[in-house]
Length: 131
Image (tube, rainbow, N blue to C red):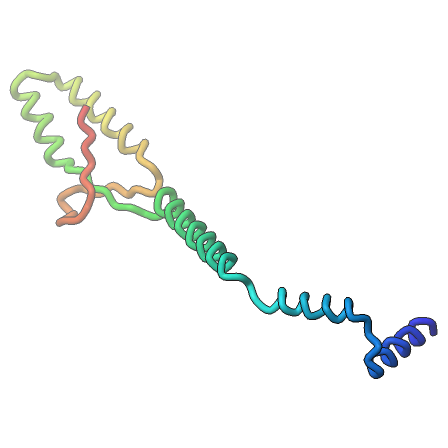
């Protein structure tokens, strides 16, 4: 019942125009401050959105996006064969070199798929796994 009496008194004050002047000024100030976000805040919001979008795209590209790289296996084997024929390396060293090549290919990041250079025509990164 007390609440209803307070509401009735406020309604009477509003209808008769007896509201306090400071209350009216505070309400007007609050309405003016709520009516819009300043230009500086809009600029800050846009900059933060741009920076977060750029950062997320960079992280995705660096760690998650699948990339194709090519390795010229035929050229590698030809070089190994030529070195063997010129007595620069032994057959045991060829086996060791192939093991090193396999280890290097296995250590490639998971988001890089390696294909042979015979399949790639152009616009692909070639791996250089020379010592």
